[in-house]
Length: 229
Image (cartoon, rainbow, N blue to C red; front, side, top):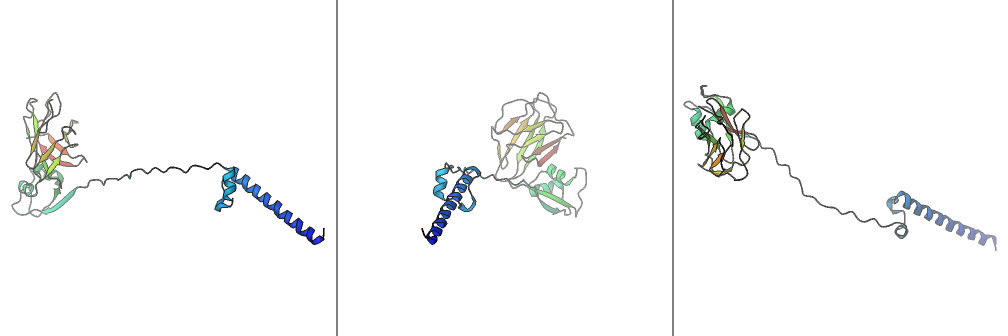
């Protein structure tokens, strides 16, 4: 064999050996160390040396929507000459007790011209404590709530507190909804709830003169209060 042909033969042989060596290294690397970046290993070789990994199933879950925290809204009112808590409460469709509580007043404090009051705004309408009837007598003791706002108002989740640890929560069933001008009696004693009467389930009366009845909505906001006469 001529020297030139011998040289060409050795070069080709070296190329074949180098290619086989490189291919072997790639196969071993791909099998034991994971796939190489940028697809360096030919697809055909990869399919021969590895079991195809199943494509992961992506399960789409529902979107969680975080409801904004309820924020109290108020109107700002400047007291005019001749105004009283009762007249302002009637004008803005809120209870006198709620108006007093929000502004830090008591019934005995005078209301001066020019004073600034915060008037609560309840988009669903205003519910107020009309009276406590039969205080001290378990058989007849009850709280009367009324709705003076427009539209309907669900009381599910609302609560009545006596400041002494007793709490009544309006149940989901029966679902109590008040309409404009409607009302409900909440008795202290045990009984069967209905859409016009609710029963606290206590075995003794709780209301006494001077005690404060507090009504809160499901967010814990005081919506009305009433001092037992």
